[in-house]
Length: 274
Image (cartoon, rainbow, N blue to C red):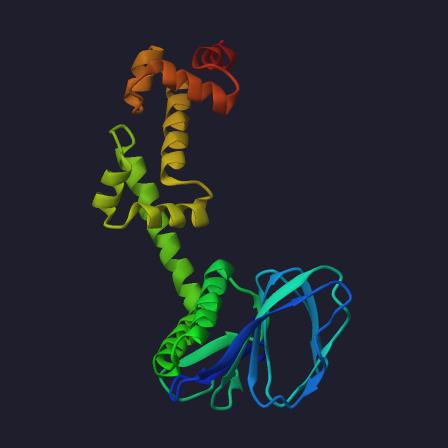
């Protein structure tokens, strides 16, 4: 991501929320043309495609895409919507941002000018929560709105996303190492959670993001891979191999092996050892 594509806001004073809403366009409708709006306009598309321009920049924003429009720029529709399109919008104020990372303060809040955000469903939920505050008394809604807005900025901050992805990979590697060390033993969700000190749902999310499978699916795949190796390098019986790699019931082992490799364990051995 280039320096010009990231807005860097001083963390103090904090950017502050003004108002938000949700807009729905039918095919043939388009975003209005505006100049010098005076506030930052954060747009997040939930459905369809929004064709939007700012000065000499033009974007086709689809579901999960965001853009931040500048207060003193000319915004316009590049073309009409071709399909039903829904998007969230939010106006906020802040000290003037800089492109790049040249500020001398210890921390900046960074927002991409445009791009696809990593966790759009969480962002949609935060926007919906902001909308609910409109029904609350202003004396209490103000603080809740600002808190939700800061949570949204944190979610959209690309540096936060990089850190989260690094943590996810590290946790997934812990799960992988643990399974390789203990695959011959019974491994329940509760045991995995207890021994690794993370909720099982979080372990699952990390493994899905990093390896594309759940811990349970990875354990099954690893056990079957070890069984395949033993079929080729030993003369052990099917029952002994099944027990050795962690399967309690040989028939279940045979069914899972056949489902993954297209051959029964015995057929696999015969095909590659005779």
